[in-house]
Length: 395
View 1 (cartoon, rainbow, N blue to C red):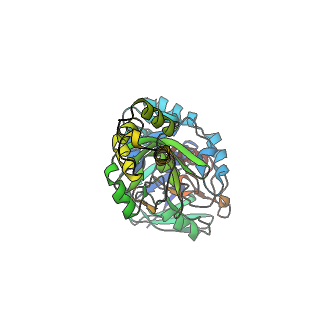
View 2: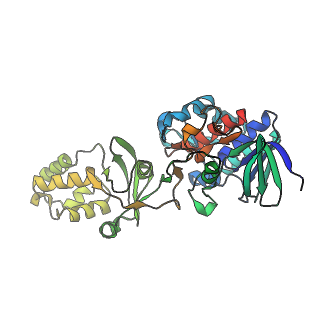
View 3: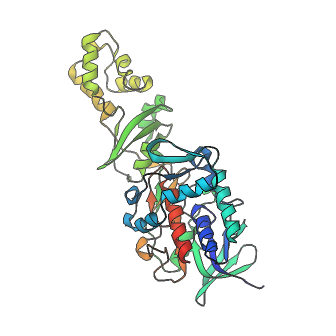
């Protein structure tokens, strides 16, 4: 069979892969992009509740984790969040800012996908869906890939853009890691990130009445803290603050939770006691935190009864339960619900300006497959745009 000869073969038609295809095509390269999914940009489609949190106004190197978080600096500075916003504006996509600099489409995430596929088409990039790579290796100074449809592609440059292991039901695999290792690249430990945390059975039983209760909280691990929403679930804790801290937490460690940040709970309860001592403790605490949470905490701290019956010591216990809760999760919900994968292809193996492998000329790694993991809130998409742009300029 005659091989399809192209300048650039990109494996993975997600955010990073499509961005790379656009840029390489615009620079006059012949580009083939393949994906085993039936549609491009599936993670884009489901993100942000279907409206795609496509970037964050505050994106910077400090919003990323990895062996060397500063690795992301070059790409993020050369193609910024403002550069991507300009493309969204040119495409006529209306957007709005939510909290903490997070930008979402007014209408649908599908608009971002359409923008990218239109740009790829105009740039001459050929998209092949429902096609996976059965085998890939060196062929002279370039690469040869055998595809699942029986065809063969030869390319001067190969781009690994298949992401990580998160959300396997959408087809996520460790293919990029395995392929990188086959080319001699080091891969750091990988684990689910931006993921709900789970509790042991005994604690879950005690907190069962709280499933569905949400509060604005501060969740901390060591010196790292996030002030965002927290949600009690039937498995443990979720919500933005918990998803954020999950990237820093490890098994066997505790996290600290403040469920009424900025409120002096002891002082408030003491004042309520002086004003109306006949008020039930759970009713008083229910003015500070949600009613169901107040009831569970009062029972947990054995502080039932009227405020007048409670000592300062009991009120301080309630204060500690609200704003000084230390809890040790037993695990996470895993890759099934994780938004991203922490870890990946080691950044010391890659050139930070071009995203090419230092030891394998012509091999590029971009997006989530790299050991660069962003916070929740559009940062990972910006890394996809920036790293894809950088590789597209170079490959």
